[in-house]
Amino acid sequence: MTERAGTFATDDDLVDIDSLIAAYYELKPDPEVASQRVAFGTSGHRGSSLNTAFNENHIAATTQAIVEYRASIGVEGPLFLGADTHALSAPARTTALDVLVGNKVHVLVDEFDDFVPTPALSHAILLYNNDPAHHDRADGIIITPSHNPPSDGGFKYNPPHGGPADSDATTWIADRANALIEGGLTEVKRAEPSAVDTYDFRGSYVDDLANIIDMDAIKNSGIRIGADPLGGASVHYWQAIADRYDLDLTVVNPLVDPTWRFMTLDWDGKIRMDPSSPSAMASVLQHQGDYDILTGNDADADRHGIVTPDAGLMNPNHFLAVAVEYLYQHRTGWNPDAAVGKTLVSSSMIDRVAASLDRTLWEVPVGFKWFVPGLVDGSVGFGGEESAGASFLRMDGTVWTTDKDGILLCLLAAEIRAVTGTSPSQLYAQLTERFGAPAYRRIDAAASTEQKAILKKLDGDSIRATELAGEQITAKLSHAPGNDAAIGGVKVVTENAWFAARPSGTEDVYKIYAESFRGAEHLEQVLTEAKSIVDAALKG
Image (cartoon, rainbow, N blue to C red):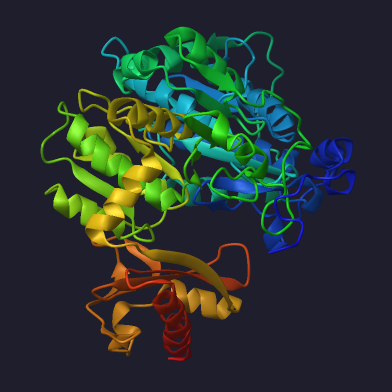
């Protein structure tokens, strides 16, 4: 961690917006260079124009590929198009719009030319497709690199189910986009739009919140809420929520600036809009005692940060556990068999809460896309991941969003405080009294490209160890228990601890996530032995 973590950004930390936009148009990717090719991770294609990783050719080719993909699966309805507050989002939106119009796709953009949070786009797609009056299907594109630095851009496709596209779709789209770039974009159709139809993303989303959150309870409780959009796409949504439901809600920082000069630096000295990071949220935490619930969102509002007067910024794992405990006791309209969904690197506290509720735990690989089927059919009531992303069902047990919804989880924190009279952090303390207090941490370990490839395909049987930090190993997993999907790494479990190892998609490291219910010292032992166990498996 840098010494400057948690301090305000200076002029030297800020990206030159003019240079960033100029590079978007001027730099042309070389398809022979791996870092300059279109590549979809768990949340779309991301990169900076300054590194020739997110430029006009990328977006034109990717949009054309999406047009062809949606046609191949029979999607003939409108395509919802939204963008966040990153500087590269605006030119990327213009490029995408030109290609969509050139291909005669019916595009819907925001009615007020506002920024569009990721959950609002997912919500719009699902509302359209669940309307019996519509006989075609809609999909969408959201332009955002999420919480990544101001120099980055991101481009994500959400098919008709409303959530992140699966790997089959993204592989097809990326391969086709790279082929189009290699062909000099001669097959890309473009036309300057004369007029485009619009959709009220904000009004539709805000008005519908009463069907998933007990807004009356929040209002009647009189609790004071502070919401910091962190310069992101939720900025006008929070004020609209306050006005629509007559809440004592203050938008703590309504500023939007593509340099994010008002942010405090993250752990590594970079500007990053991560609402789960104490360093990035340092300026927000200055208001900790001013509100009963204080919240933060990242640039596209798919992540949440929850701040309470008594404990400050909650660890995302802690709030997810509290959310599960509360929701499954207060949502009587849900399917009584609705499972609790979590990614396999999320805290085992969720496992213990689910067991106490007599609910099935549905554990899936990293990536919110895995929760989509369960949220759509109501068989999963809640899906959450340790990186502060989650969504859940409406009061009546039907789908709300199939992408992460940071605004929703912030409002849930307010509902929990209003209904129980207790802060979410205090409720988590009660959980630790019942189930123990886990220690959780993630570290990085060096790994070559070849080693990362081996780890990604490693089988659980390749782990020779029988003990971990003094406990018998009870499971060695290479596929998730919930859906038997490959986890792209391994997870090793004991009675009171576990670790998971996954290769990084962008750096020469692999990530080790670990947790112990036997304290911080035992956790360090788990982490040390985890690295030895994985390194031994990589050597074969």
